[in-house]
Image 1 (spheres, rainbow, N blue to C red):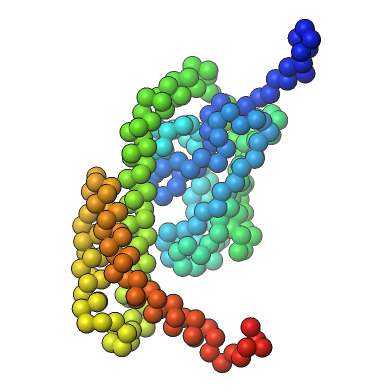
Image 2: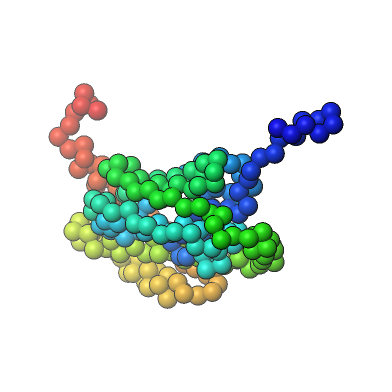
Length: 245
């Protein structure tokens, strides 16, 4: 604490730039924001996109832009040993901790198995005040374009998730029985038609078109999803009585 006249002024170290990791589509997910008081802690939960993925790459970044190519790469490491599970099942917690000396510890932990991996890095190493200022100015100058690019990537990510879930359902062993007894005439054809349409527009630069087709596929598969969920619940409860629940 510095005494200035009749006032006490507390000088605190803060993070000059945000810190985060790369996520699907090449975007940066910020975990500790710029101007956070040091020491600082932040964490986010992530999962997998691919079935039976047994490792995840952690790419640590520094900066204010939306896309990873426009930010500063600090470190990379891999969390291995994740048991094969369907996409979306693993729960990977990524925690950032900056100590009073400015050392950043990044820990990735899969919560179902408790396996983890940690690295340490000094974010300020090799970073000058001029570079910080340049990165901040560029983030302001490109904010609108960056935000639009992020929204487009998010739309594509959501579309790919819906495509993956739909194709997985169509390939499932029980789908033939469901299609025979539960789906209305033409319902399967509608699903396949909209699925093909969404795949065609996936690389489009028009975010609204992608979102429109994604919603259309969600609508087309809603009944199928309900039937498959009901069958799963029935199978899980089969043979159990109320006292078991």
